[in-house]
Amino acid sequence: MDPYDQARLRKNHTKLLDNIESPHLVHYLYEKEVLSIDDMERIEAKTTTRDKNFQLLTMLPRRGEGAYGHFVAALKDQKVKVYDEIVELLEKTDVSDVDPKKFLSSSSSRGGASGVTTYSRTANTMQVSNTSIVHGSGNIVINTGSGCTINRYTGVPPAKPAGRGAIRKPPDSRK
Image 1 (cartoon, rainbow, N blue to C red):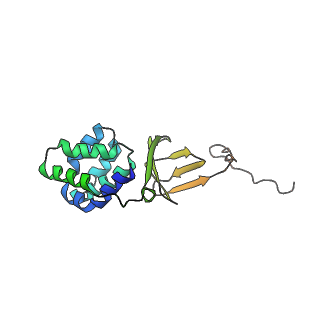
Image 2 (image 1 turned 180 degrees about the vertical axis):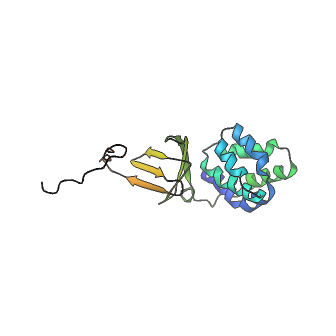
Image 3 (image 1 turned 30 degrees about the horizontal axis):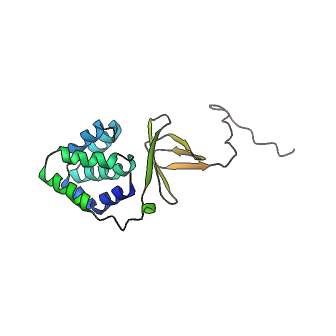
């Protein structure tokens, strides 16, 4: 998502948390392929409206370039006065002070056994969600579900696995 759109969401986070009804928006975002079925289920699993809204708002910046535009379109589509006011507020939000380098640069790719892989990178951190393995730019990222391991190699490919259940012998140090 564009850093300026992320800033608009961040600067209006509390207003959005308190004034949107995520179930109204989630199905629209699913139709536009911004959210997956898993995303919808994750949002709906939350017990309060505020928690559902929080889950949606934290997912949006990691859903690619079109996510913000579809979110605004979903608000407009509802034809609710408070949503029209929110759209106006988002559009009028001053983002001239935003440093684009401080915001997530996100992209999506397909990979791994679990389907959609979404990863976001900030200055020194990479966050991975809903993923088994992602390959790219010299990194192999493996998500364990509760966290991730990042293996970085430069020019030397990783060793091939010995096979399922195989035991590797340590290198012979007598040579």
